[in-house]
Image (cartoon, rainbow over all chains, first blue to last red; front, side):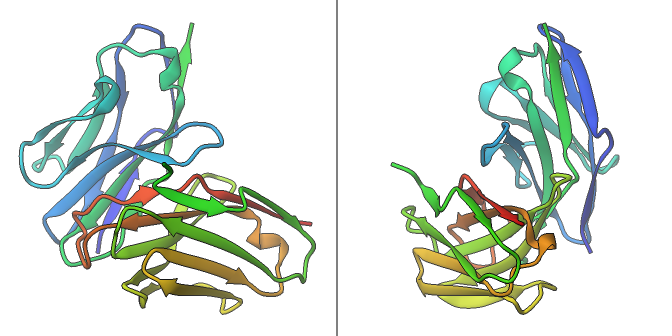
Length: 113
Length: 115
């Protein structure tokens, strides 16, 4: 069975400060992990994904995430937040041989001016 | 060009009505999905089709019926709409069959409001 837990439902940061959105996963298989972003009233956009290649994954808009098997974590980071980063972020786990994405409950990122 | 498109974007209807949401992808993908996002933003898969064949059918009321006329289209028909059906419905597609590692591309969503 697979599951994903996003540890914070809301995160607030000031513009220009680092962003950390936390995600822990559970998977019986070697997992694939994704981060998606949803801006208000928009669809979901892929930020980055991990598929057992490099453990540090770089994505769009300056985001990156590190896969840590020992900690079963896949936290999303960005060195400097921008106002346009304000959105809902979803961590997703999937596994080889399955069609399913399992979504986390989302983290709402607020960026303060 | 929109990769995954859905129509309509907004749908407001009365309880008991029947409605359909259409989805089209122009990415040449083999697999398409329907997700429901509830008021708390939680996303859950409902159905998935691979080359017009149903491969995922989650615990969804049988008032919901997906139809895939070809691999570029996946429609969702909902009978006897209930208040609890109010949600945002997302269509998605991916290239591989059975590839959990594959990226899914999402449409813009259809916000269904049942009055």
